[in-house]
Length: 399
Image (cartoon, rainbow, N blue to C red; front, side, top):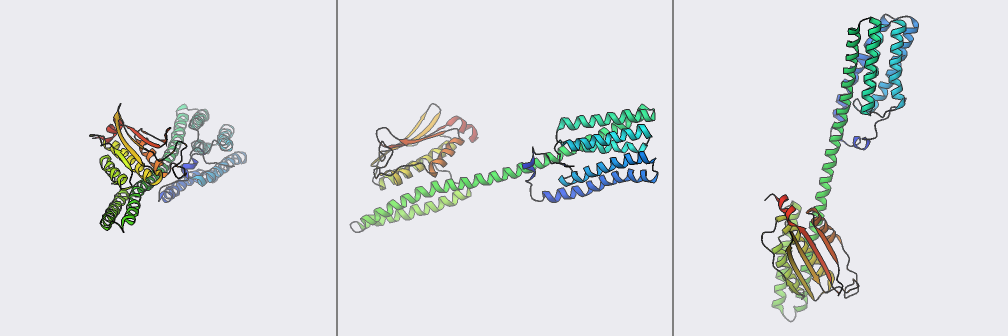
């Protein structure tokens, strides 16, 4: 007889919290002991005063069927629902039929225990409707047959209610155990998702932070090398700036890993002016507006940092423009440069492609219901635009 574990929650059942297996094992041992006791005790009483051979054969057959069911059910755990396997349902039906025949044909009172076995078997069925219907049918059979044999409806009703109560308790405990395992699996899955999200945040923030800082360091170091012979004082100042940017980058990395780093739009705009000037790019950078929601300000700050980093590293531009727009309930940043031709290639012929930075920036904007647009301009050049609604961010900010 093949008793299969329910597949609707099989993926969840393979995942558990640390120590969950030990707790289930500790619960399984007393459950098995109690079940075996209430299975063997009526059998011992029966064998102490055996009925005629035909009736004894019927009862032993029913006990053997239930023994096979128990062995199979113990293998999948004491409170795991099983698939509505025809063999399992047939076993419950067979036990009931043998009990009915033993009582009606031979008047064996010990056959009343078989209704409990059939009800426990039905209580492990995966389908809620099928399990309840089967338990109800078994309770009705126990009531009617025992009332007829004892000629007392109160006695039959007592047995039927008891069978139904114990069977439904088994059914409820099975459902509770299944729900607990699903809850444990969901908690583990949420923990894994939180770890993955934190890793993605750190990777994204490190890329944005180090990409910008290293680009500025490379530009200033190159400028210092060029003017070293002709203007040592200028070279010394540039080297000093390199040291300052490097220290700021180290601080930013530490804050990013700790989860405290939130860029400011005003600070990023100021940094953009300095970086573009150091690179010899003529720039028009508009000031930051006041009273932007904190989350919106941070996302736009990241947009300026990523956009300027791409201008410095990829565009070979001569002119750049940074605009900050607030209209219609949205706040947006637009960064344009003239370093990309209309065919989407830079002046040196290399293609400008969206990388990890733009992907992370798009994710940041999407969290606030915003959007990112990036691509070559029709008349030559490249534009990055990030827009974020302020209403939703302000509500979620809680300030």
